[in-house]
Length: 121
Image 1 (cartoon, rainbow, N blue to C red):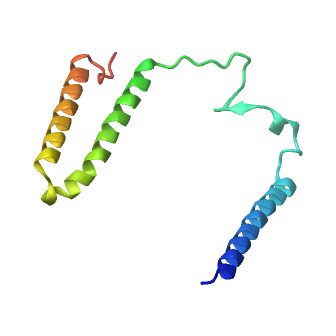
Image 2 (cartoon, rainbow, N blue to C red):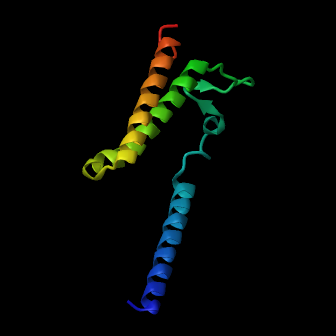
Image 3 (cartoon, helix red, strand yellow):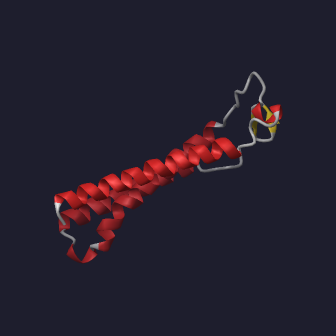
């Protein structure tokens, strides 16, 4: 494929994308229900009208559990390539994997003992 063909493809895809975007804007402008009724212009959130003080008290426990989930998920994602290539594992890689799993198990045990994973409080 020559450089002219690649350039033509890029330009045509860009024009198609811009046209699709412009078409959706025009469609939403003509067929939206926002201008027909003043009720549509009010703020509406989760089935209730917005009040001046919208602060919500969040439980810190949910954030901690979310962070714990992300940490364990990242550990599993890092272990997958090692487990897929288990036949060609070296001794150093085995030690790294072993100590990583030990640290992961100890951190899980620590969180279990500190009741960080308990949902009933």
